[in-house]
Length: 152
Image 1 (cartoon, helix red, strand yellow):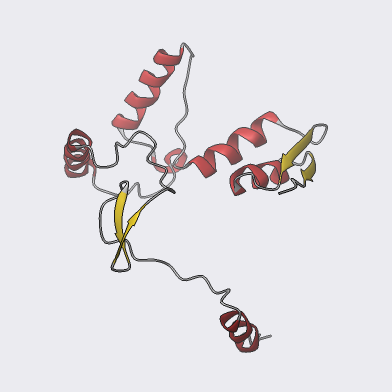
Image 2: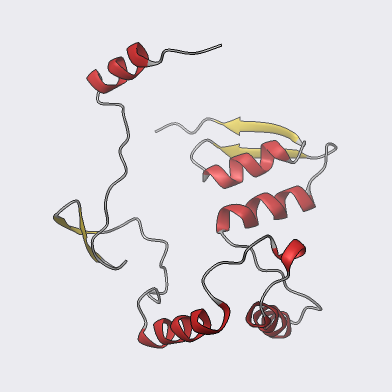
């Protein structure tokens, strides 16, 4: 079975609804160059402004020399680095908990935490503007799920 999406793609192109990845040409920061244009950015997740901190860059380079730049597999399959273990231990101590668990992204954290906290007996009420990870986490948890329309 094959699908011809040409007509649908052409219609979306005509309606200016096709998304195209943008090419970032500078480090993350408040001012960036994207697709040859300079912008003041308001969409960064670098809330603390640490993405380009010289000490973090140096630490990353040192770790990459020792451990490489890829995990090879999920940490439950292949293990995770001593650095990950030390960070989890330090975070647990800092927060006064027995253990801490690192997630690779905020998206994965929301999926994992929501699924761990909710069951089919629970209900989730979210507004439609929540981040996709919160919406997906709610849906995947199996809980009764309602999206509340927010009037704009």
